[in-house]
Length: 143
Image (tube, rainbow, N blue to C red; front, side):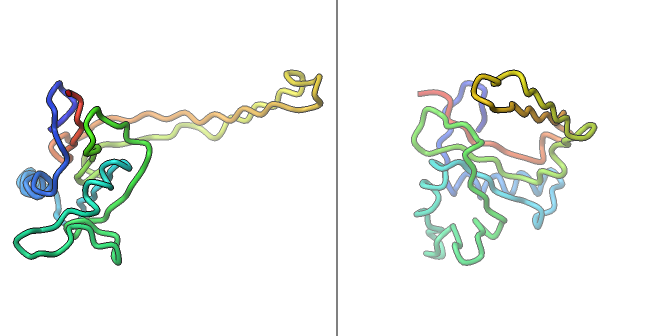
């Protein structure tokens, strides 16, 4: 699965496979999280673990396959209808740093004809992958 020209449909079966791959790569099972976009949530919300006939998504505890579960609109949609997903230990996978404080710029002249002030707020950040085996992604980028 991934964004390298292949089409990967989001499924619970793939996520179960990813669990094994992540643990095999040294990820602590208890630190795995699942983050999906809206279409991915739609796909997983009705999915079942057939062997147990239990829902894969536990709405009471907000977990999927026992892992913390989040839905966001920040993950871009692929061309397929099944949605996109990131699964893994994000603390092992990547680092993000914020630099300096908030820069707040007040410009009272930009909109002076309407008696308004423009505020611009900037925060500088950077991110880097630390251990790419600590996460898996599903993104359908081919029709």
